[in-house]
Image (cartoon, rainbow, N blue to C red; front, side):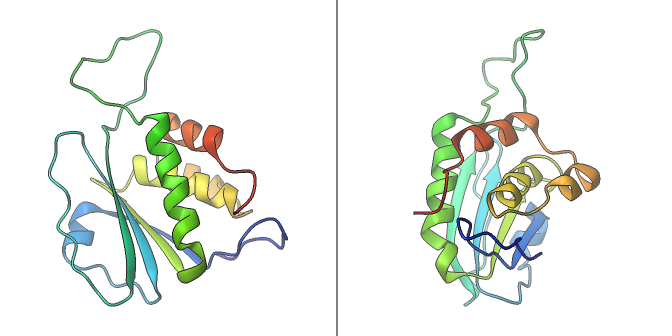
Length: 154
């Protein structure tokens, strides 16, 4: 996907969403990329092969859950924090000038990583609707990333 013309936003070539199994088996990405790998709180990190195109990895640990006023989450369930959202934006800023793609993975590639992808699309001036149409983004993750989104790249 190409970003819309906008002087305040960087142009990103591609956003790739995948699952943990695909990352561990060596997903082929045909450009340089940075990986945001999301796992459940308490789970081991994904085993990521180190292809030459991989420029950086950010490991995140939080459960696929959304806080709700109607229901209290069990104490062992850890939702994404504001600090984790800010770490994602720092990672994006750090790697953006040196890559052609961001690869995002979570356990099944259906909720947390599409939520990050949708927020990245907005940041890059792209349409986030395909992520909402084709996946089930975690609304809490998406909301935190939108709340903490930098105004413009540094």
